[in-house]
Image (cartoon, rainbow, N blue to C red; front, top):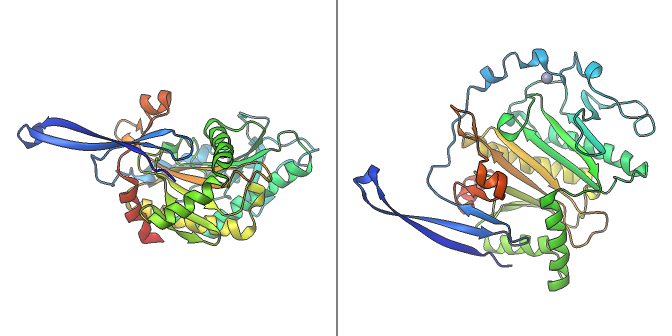
Length: 340
Ligand SMILES: [Zn+2]
């Protein structure tokens, strides 16, 4: 496993130190699978400003379409051949078609009736239950023989900095024959990796990370956790790889519990850094795709300027897909490791 980086150094005369010469290191890292580059810089402490969340949330339940008094009136239903009861329900969780679809078979699943769930209130049990609910939908899609039953994807935008437009916590759940960009690049690169080296990339990666130790977090069940070598998030990314699972439908209830347990640990540690928002995506192969291993990426989100509402994605990331991480993933690992 090659972990490549171009090391750079900026020389400047720093006004904060009487215009004395200052040398600032940075790195351009290559993702070991796809070659996608990520810039690692180091100019701030791993601490972010958090708004008054109670004030942010106050009153938003009055117009929330996912709250219990409205959800069964304002959300759409599936056609009878897919979900005869219209919407799926499990306890107080509801799964229904996405009113703003970006693929043929897209659903939204709520975490229940509670309008606002602070990040630290997501217990492993609650998350495992929501993921299991999404899987029930995928199994129905699979049984229906739907042509879009190829990649079964769960995405999570939690709180506004992540792109979440509602406070009420929910998952994006969709099945598609069209893999999104980065997932498609991974699928193709994993195929080439298997052909070239005769082994599975993620098995080699997790073995290498475990041996190196500097980004490795630990193992829960058959799920291995680590900070990503070339992250996309400004506060690093956390990667979880599920051993021997090729696709979402390979996940057993025990795996969902293990994934949820790891996520709760990661959230608890990022919370200490002031992070209160994140994206989480599942990356899946197709059934029996032995070049692939199911993995998920947890990526903390924040604002560059809380006062102005400046997102943490600017021109570099939006139009070049070139990411900037504000700290070395190995330093972030030191902090996250406390939870593992
Ligand atoms: Zn609500």
